[in-house]
Amino acid sequence: MTAGNIPTRALVLLGVLTLVWGFNWIIVAVALRDFGPWSFRTISLGIACATMFVISRLRGESLAVPKQVRLRLLYAGAFNIAIWNVCTAYAVMLIPSGHAAVIAFSMPLWAAIIGFLFLGERLGLRHVVALGFGVVGITLLMAEDFVKFASAPLGLFLGILAAIVWALGTFVQKRTAWNMPMVALLFWQMLCGLVPIAIGAAILELPDQKTPSLMGVGTALFVGLVPLAIGMASWFSIVKLLPTHVAALSTVIIPVVAVLSGGWILGEPLGAIQYAALAFTVVALGLVLLVPEKASADKSPVVPE
Image 1 (cartoon, rainbow, N blue to C red):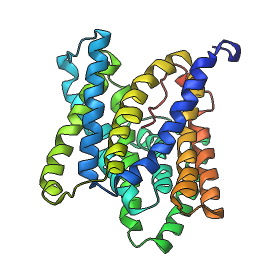
Image 2 (image 1 turned 120 degrees about the vertical axis):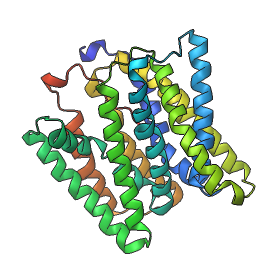
Image 3 (image 1 turned 120 degrees about the horizontal axis):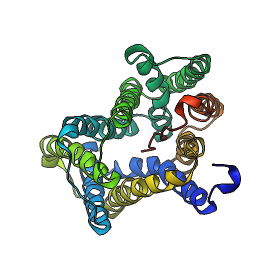
């Protein structure tokens, strides 16, 4: 697809979705003032799951899961939904939301490492340079956070863990012939992730949950309905109209929006160190995601979550 053939409407929608997903990190930070991480994720995923079910029904799509992919569906639900959502929620509570976003979106770098070490994938010079830039970017954030936030080690660890499990989930996603509609696949992944999170919320947080504010309830519902449900459903329609390297721009821009919005709106740290860390990370992601590769020409871009 040439630049002249790219639909303007798809680019506009991609831009809107990228902003929604970028601002989502500060919205999560606001919601977590009223909810524990397990309870918040239960509400937002419950809304998203119900919305996916309705969208699938309105489209007349089947929700049947082929027998041969059911175990892989559990893996994808655990990596992409359950562990990712819990880890990122805790990370946002423990370190600035923009920092959590940058670390979590280092996923493509971890995917390159995992692919090289365990799956026999080639790690070229471009990937090595990208890893170097990514390490510098994350190190800058770590140094800043260790100085200012007593909870930084745990927050940084959970952010990196989220990136690693997202990478594992991406491998499961891309290496499985699902043979089912994408909305139905998202519904079942969300449901598989929702169940253990809801159990965790009932055990760990429900007995002590205080009455949340209207702001807290509104933000939890918004995250479930817009970024998770409508955003994800729209994403897979949009990427069909765009070249892979164009759609992947979203993954690069989201942490930028998250850091800037966290600084401007929530008063999170935003200075020379943050800008430098952001620059190194964006270059690293750009090298991995945006440079054309013949071998990856038919691959779908990772899903920004």
